[in-house]
Image (cartoon, rainbow over all chains, first blue to last red; front, top):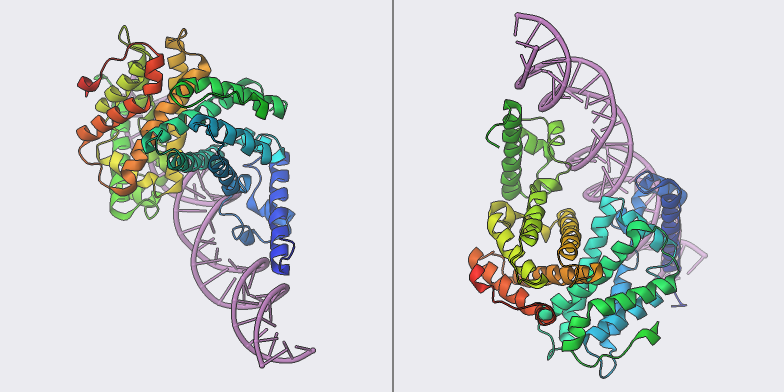
Length: 213
Length: 213
DNA sequence: TAGTTATATTTCACTGGACGCAATTTTGCA
DNA sequence: TGCAAAATTGCGTCCAGTGAAATATAACTA
């Protein structure tokens, strides 16, 4: 990666400039109030060029979404012996939320706030979530062909994602601040584990995963 | 409902005219190809007036979404003695899918098709689904305070919705036609029931609901 | 290094959804 | 019939997104 053609390096810099300009303006003036022209001006680029980096205004809030899905997939693939589907899912959540600061970080906080205020952003977020959900279910079924039918995998993944989003929903319903990221992750893990106990019983061994936080 | 002022009746007729014009044009020429001007012209109304009936172009595909959520809520409230949360959910699905032809019907088929092709429509659909999911979870937790914490309710509802959407996803992934609605409902019930067995065991009695189709 | 190809970016014009507002028509009712 | 409220229309405006041609810049080749 150190050896990149000048073109690639420049392109990466421009992309980053667009992102920082966008998040900056979104934070300062609001999402709907910020026009693509504003972002283009701040990034010292033409409005038309933005679309050569991002497909839409909403996507400015979801860069590297593929990477995050990929991380979860990898965590599923690299399962430890003795882990059942539920353990794998829990582990995938902890590891992937650790690496990509998807719950902490400046843009993450902004995204969480806009998801509950701007319909377009919410729609895009749910689309990403749905795609991720399907992808995860597919891989989960592939890794545990004996334990899970494709449909059970879809249900289990649905339960998992549903539990996580439900918890986050309850969380941010009243208290705005994302609090301490570590504590949030711990709560998320504990609560998801509890919500999935029905499956934990039916599946294989139930190791405590608290140490992984 | 029989006694409506002339104004209300006329408004209802216009609303219906807009809907039929929209679905008609969508079916014939495609969603993105149909402009609001086209719809307005076909409904013999001004483009501006459409926004006094529907908030957006996508919403033309989701009329009475509140009513469908309400039906599910009612089905939850009218639970039979001895039913656990899972049974209530299954029953709510069967009854609500029977009354509002949400899986059959002309507009439903159109909606299902557009959900997988037009991003904006998919986003709107997922938003509706998410809202419904949260609402159902809330009511479920209220009805079964002993069995379900708010979080467990969120997880269970997530599993339920996840299973249903997963099944529908697998279904329409290859075969386009919605097939026989009765058969589809039966498959949906059977498969969802199977996907939720982990919860069925932990909850109260497990009556067979096949007769309710 | 000059010249050529490939790729990025700009510029401009345009479409279409959404919204605000004032004027105008329609409807309900006294 | 006449008047107030509500519905509708007809503007104009904003902005996201797209297409196409022109221009600029990097990469490659001889």
